[in-house]
Amino acid sequence: MSEKVILVGVETEENKQNYLESMHELAGLTKTAHGEIVFSMTQKRPKVDRQTIIGKGKVEELAQLVDAHEAELVIFNHAMTPRQSQTVEEIIGVPVIDRIQLILDIFAQRARSKEGKLQVELAQLNYLLPRLMGQGHSLSRLGGGIGTRGPGETKLETDRRHIRNRISAIKKELKNVEAHRERSRQKRQQSNIFQMGLIGYTNAGKSTILNLLTNAETYSKDQLFATLDPLTKRWQLPQGMQATITDTVGFIQDLPTQLIDAFHSTLEESKGMDLLLHVVDASSEDRLQQEQTVMNLLKELEMDDIPILTIYNKADRIDPFAFTPTLFPNTLISAKSSKGKEILAEAIKKEIMELLEPYLLTIKAEDGQSLHAIRRESLVLSETFEEEKEVYQIRGFAKKSSVWIRRMDDELDS
Image: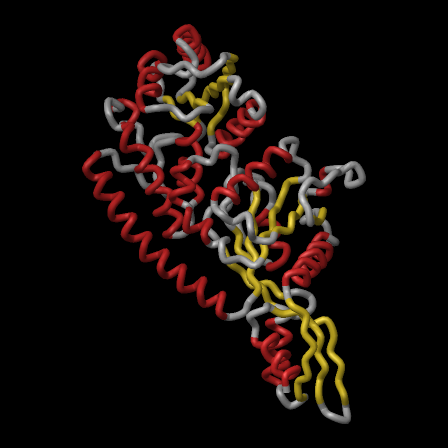
């Protein structure tokens, strides 16, 4: 069942550069949350009104629009204080939520894993706690519409004391989950496996890229925030080297701080990566803005020192000859074309060679275990068999800390 929604946005001196994209994005978020947009109200003013965001006259106009369109919910494209939403709600007679609550609601619907659900619920409860004063009638619709749903089919807790207890319980549980995740991450790092993280603006095509390379069957739809739970899959390069690719939550303009805090461990997943694959929707009108959002968030998360390969995706929707990339190194592909996988694998291979150390090693033909391991753990470029000595001369690239580089150094020393 979709709800009839009116969107409200104020263009100010501060936000005028991204205002249109932001409103366009709000409409996309509303549709993702199954809202039916019946009207979109915009207003220009130097800055938002302290009491109602849009000012008294506009609120009265909004009340008339709510009646005329039989709207059931109003969504503001701004973070609102509890007092602001309460004031507007009293005048217009229907529930009011802001962009943050909308994003939290979508996250609640998308979370699949236990950790994802806990993180979303924590963010929702932290957001809800200061808003429980005098919100009687709108909280009675909890579990009954956009902005009121907890993870899965659950209803959000509405008692303040219970909320505080629940927040403590979730934090405790998340600590255990994070400890387990940390152990898995350390295991991967010790295993010499080359690790890559997929990052990018929401709906840029990260899950599609993951499916393309690994046949992972992840949820990849043309929707905002289709992926919430980090998924790590193995990928074997055409040369035989094995790597892991981790898909992460999509970034978005003005991502609520409650969510950055709640999803810290999910985003932490990308911190130990050897290479980040930044997927960009090459066909998006707001491409530059989206690239900037991702780069700013990486800086905020202290991840801007990790090497990045930018994958410009959705090349089938643009004229590739007229396209001008802004981030380097990069590759332009369509994840849907037959050649996409080949082009992407080649671009990643090139990048891996830049990051790894070259080696030249001699391995005895009878040492099958080492031969199998070197093909799996490093990027082998050539193998030459010397019949007289019954050895393989192997040339390739490996991690600096790997056993193969140490072995080459030992060979040179002896």
